[in-house]
Amino acid sequence: MGFELDRFSGEVDPDFKCNLCNKVLEDPLTTPCGHVFCAGCVLPWVVQQGSCPVNCQRISTKELNHVLPLKSLILKLDIKCDNHARGCEAVVPLQHLGEHAETCDFSPAKCRNRGCRQVLNLRDVEAHMRERCEARPAGLCEQGCGLVLTHGERRAGAHGCLRALRAHGAALQARAAALEKALKKEALRAGKREQSLLSRLAAAQLELQVTALRYQKRFTQYSARLDALARARAASPGKGEETKALTLVLHRDSGSLGFNIIGGRPCVDNQDGSSSEGIFVSKIVDTGPAAKEGGLQIHDRIIE
Image (cartoon, rainbow, N blue to C red; front, side, top):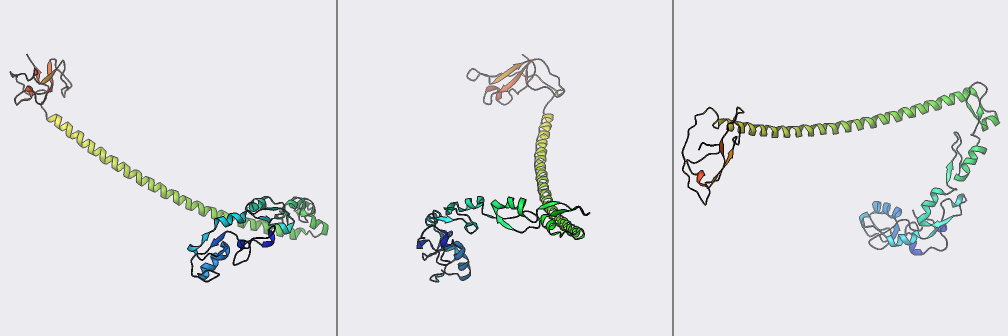
């Protein structure tokens, strides 16, 4: 699979040759025993034989390694163009051979006129199609079919309307069959794409439902907590219950009686929305004198 020796300028170092094809190495691989071959030569051999081609030592493809320094040296060698036999005289470094081939004027190219099978140099295609091709258009048939005549048909007088119409009809049928086949293929691809999208949509809907259930559960929990708080508040003493006046004697603790007061409305409105004026207990210090058993409560009204 290597490169022919006569394509290179000057003598080629023997170390650059493949031990199988005896050509200049292309993508060299080395065996555990030190022999070097083209990748395209040694891989099929090892797959089929399971051994080194030189000394028959048992090896596997996993044991083959690239020889990058050797490959780098080979890529610097000057080589003739792939189209040398077609007339190209270019000599380029092997590493630039692919770039040159893409733009080489001597690359083989087919004539694009229908019915012409000639293969020419790329640089000659346009002139051939315009000036020399026997299949190039020469005008329309004036005998009734109205099809395009080629220069070859006009020169030889070989055009027959009936035959030409049959050939034209067969070409249209073949074209229609090709388009129908392509349409079916595209419809199959679109069907698979639709199934994929539907599957993704179903997965998204399922994920949305799971998320909705999760939030519904949280909402139910929060509603239950709010209901519990409302019931607890409803069970606390409210307006309409009997009230009584108490006289309390509190002994100051470090200068404080252990409670705060607020004037005007109480801290929390009554359930019926009304409120009463006065001075109320707004806070009780846990360890203060007012917090002792039988002492004050928050919202107690101070009468005097």
